[in-house]
Image (cartoon, rainbow, N blue to C red; front, side, top):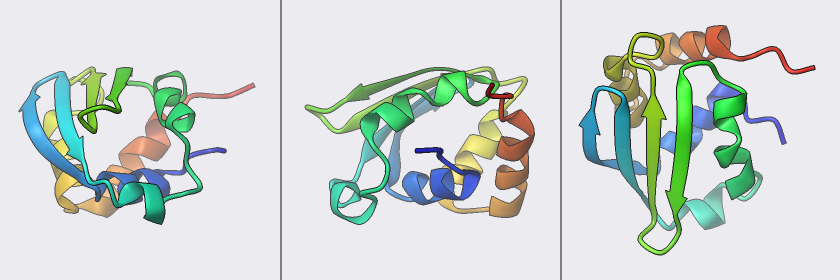
Length: 105
């Protein structure tokens, strides 16, 4: 499934920040996500780095329900990640994600 910027915003609404430094974001994932966002798989999330510029790596830890995202701060700034997690300036975040989507052939 293709994950749209709107779907990324929806998924991020289930995240709580554990730690965040420029270039590395670690979040706890609310278990309700399994029941409420059933149309997105872990594989869909893990492949985001190949689809969006600026995201270098995503690591999912199923045991402790956390996700670590390594990103390029110059391309997708820390402040926009904070906005995404906090549900703020969503139109701007969606626009950034749209602009960073890679051409998929």
